[in-house]
Image (cartoon, rainbow, N blue to C red; front, top):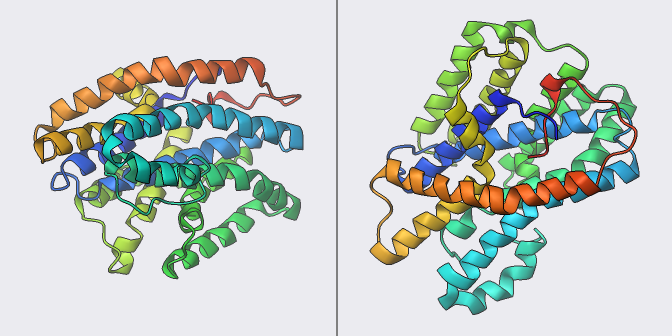
Length: 333
């Protein structure tokens, strides 16, 4: 496997901590849901970087890409569903079972609220359909000769769809993935704006993220409706900054949290729902809640996630592509 990019794990850690604290204690991080937007930008950047490699946009390699993505997200995703179905909400197992096909195929949302454990799964469906649709869009964009312009136009379409209350969550959030996509294209053409390497850009991006987390998310006004977009833009600035000025320091704890962030994203709502169902309130001691969630995530990461990722890398290799610079790539994990 290729070496992980540490600063991307920092961003993953920040994203999952935002979501965890936002769910467990809304008064502490009322805008914590913007962590999902941070994840979307990272995904857009990495997936585009992978598909920009020579020979990747062929049908065989795209199919392999999809299979490897499925091996990445499905095992832990299915484990989450089984835990919720067979243990946490077994009293509602019949209602859950009726909606299982749509959940497993990412084709429908739940019509019944089963708690945070299911409530977070909408973002997995959005990400899944990005994986499915993006390779074709990248192929078309490159054929036009103006891929950045193509995706900027698509961003406008996505934002317009969101303003018009589209029923497609994937389309409504597609512009956040495309922020990462455009960064990958700029990196590929060595055209990342130099001013984004400045301390002013870096500090401004951090300030925007802090403000987004501190302000409750609301769809009642234009500002609140696009709070996640502001966070996504700030994330893009941070990635561009670190691409040009790679950090010299190492943050092992943040890197570790980032490495298990997918498990943490899926498991923390189970912890919340269990406490809510048994004690009728959400966790009041945030550090304890975070520690429990991360400890469980460490187990599932190595017991469920990593073995399937290793199998996918062992048996499903891409054919005839050149390796991109280390700053642009990382493992599918």
